[in-house]
Length: 193
Image (cartoon, rainbow, N blue to C red):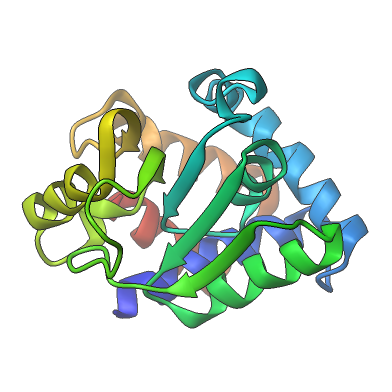
């Protein structure tokens, strides 16, 4: 999907704006601090205590900030993404932190290869709405979720307050930081989300 590549570019832009150039344990720590400060509400949906005895599936890995947090705090972590780069990055994170019982692999959210009732907890942030069939993706989540399990799914709302105010944020950013072709590409992607 070309849209997936654009999404990764937005994340890479944030990484670069922080002055980071290479993927290292230090640069990922800096990025993750920024990420969870930027999205402070996320961790309340999956606290360390609630994860400790859980088999966790994350669908859509992005830059791996959420995945690393889930992997460090759960009994077992599986991260999946259709795109190769997020999987490779999550594998690096697992390697850097020497996390046992954690894997990252390529999967299609519309047709997951896991058995029914495989996971206690499933997280998908900003991913499922990018699939060709949102209903099929959500059905797959329910299929692989154990009875009594919990799923945290966040999808973007087309007419949210954020999407309505986004043009104003863009103009402020242009005034403060100047114009560039990459900013237009990032804005187009942001406007889509």
